[in-house]
Image 1 (cartoon, rainbow, N blue to C red):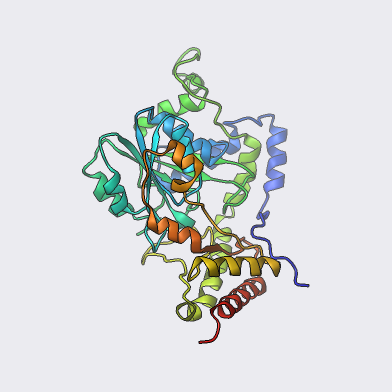
Image 2: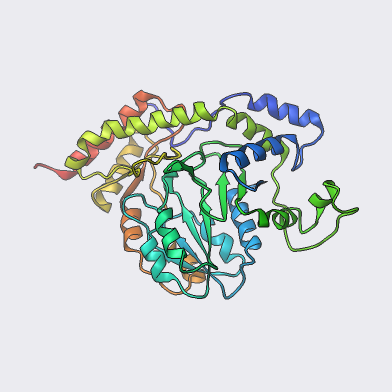
Length: 385
């Protein structure tokens, strides 16, 4: 029997455990400790950002975005239907109605033409997701939003840390962007996230919201003689123990990205020669862009083939999976959506997409075995030619 190839396998890449011990021994294990500051400073430098706030998850970072934007009932937020539920629920929780935009068939990022059709004077924000770490069409979105200066662009960059669009880091195109350090992401600490603040005008209030509505930061900076309740907010901050683990991962970022690029390129180079004959669509990276190398997906010729291949891979111990059920057709989408939106590309992609095992230490032999089995299953399913 073949050994199981897991879908994901988080790995230690450096001194994470020693750094966690150091954080424990420091006596400061709550948020805003020394390791938190190291991570925040690094991420702020990478994004040339006004500031970065570490959060307990990317979902929390999105919820903090909604608070910062003062989203409220009656407002509309546009999100891609092809995304994880957090992209929408963070704004629905604030009372907004959600409009679901379709995605482009190549990059699977939000389609600016679909966004344009959904725009009106109720829209407060548009959330772009860089699917798989491949840049969404931020240039097209900028053109649409140029006619709507009061609408904020938020980047859900859970997949794309260190990815680039035309030499510019993902997460720097919107007023706000969010990151994820969940165990399934490129850089992990179990659970964690970050809010990247690209507008200096947002920094002071963002910290008040993060500090449970108090001006605690101003107090510790000596700007006020005591701190007290000033605004709404919550306890969004990441423990310094987790920040220490994350710092250990980020110190090895070049090594991690090289490993993940190796996995991505081997999948692509193995499948590309047979893709056209088998009707497979591989990830499309726009020329000049650098993806975040978060995942590798394949679009199968039709839903029936996808299901046969998925089942066959799993029976062979290869833990592939499908991806997002379209949000516009979900129970939550019907409940919190602002009317019904047609998203035909999302419907099509969701039914045909297959995610292959992907993690830093995935062996070449396991990639080759996965590709060979996928090709055999597709070929068998197509019958004689």
